[in-house]
Image (tube, rainbow, N blue to C red; front, side):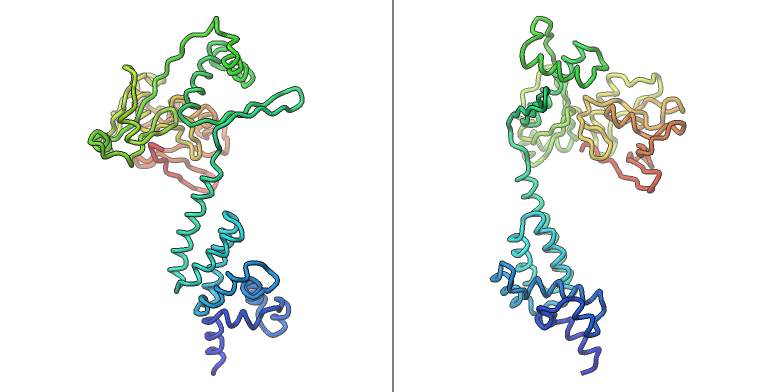
Length: 361
C-alpha cells in the first residue's frame, strides 16, 4: 500500500486512527512525524472518544461503534456541534448529539442535522431562560430597586400610564429620577388628587390578505403587531374588545402606506398613523421600543431638503434618533438609517454593512 493509500485509509476510518493515538499527547505525535496542527486535532479527538478517565463511558462506547465509518473531518464537524450543545445543555446534551450525529453519513448530512439539533437546543434554552412573572425589592445602601416582570401587554399599558403621569408631574423632558418618582406615586396613590385618567390609542397593523384570513377564522397562526411593541395572535385579535377609538391600520403588501408631501417639518397625525402601518417599533436594529414611544424621523434630514412624507420617514426612539449619524458636522460613528432603492436599513460607514429593516418587526 502506498503512502497516499495509507493516509487516505487512516483519514477515512478515523476511529481506528484515534484508537491508536489513545493516551498520546500532541507532542508525542509530532515526534512520530505528524504535523503540529494534525497532531493537536488527533490528540483532542482521541481524548474525547478514548479517554477512560472521563464520564459518559456508555455514550463514548456507542459513538466508537456506530461512528466507525466516519472520516476525521466528519468527527471534527461533529465536535463543533457538540461544543455548542455543551454550552446550551451541558455534557449530557453534547454526548447525546455526538451519538446521534455518529449514525449519519457524509459532511452535508451531518451539518444539516447538527444545525437543526442546535436550533432545537437554542429554542429550549430561550424558553427555560424566559423570565417568570414576579416582583422583587432589593436594597442597595439607602436606595431600593424594584424589579417587576409581567406579560408584555400589561407592562406596555403600565409603561404608557407611567410616562403620561410623569409628563403631568414634570413636563415632557422628565428625568429618570422624576420618572421613578412618578411610578412610585402611582403605586402608593400619593397623587390621587391630581391624577387625570389616561387613555391610550393602540393600533394594530394588519395586511389586507391576513385580515381576510382572520375574519374567516383561519388566522390562528398569524401574528398581529401592535404599536405599543406587543403582538397577538389572529384569534386574540378577532376576540379583542377594541374601544370606539381603536383602529386597525390596513396596509397593502405591494403598495404600502399612502404617501404625503413636504408641507411641514413635523408629521401630522395622519402621517404618524401611516407610519404605524410601516413599522410598529423603533427600526434601529435590536431595538423593540414601541412606535407610540418613538419619534417620526426624517431619513433625508429636513434641513437638507428631505420631505415630510412616508417614504422619507421612519420610527426611531429618542435615543437612536439622537445617535443616528445623519449630520456630517456632528458625526457620532454609530451608523445611520438610509433608504436604498426603496429599502430602509441601517448603514455602518466604517464597515460598509447595510442591514435591511423589516416591518412590522
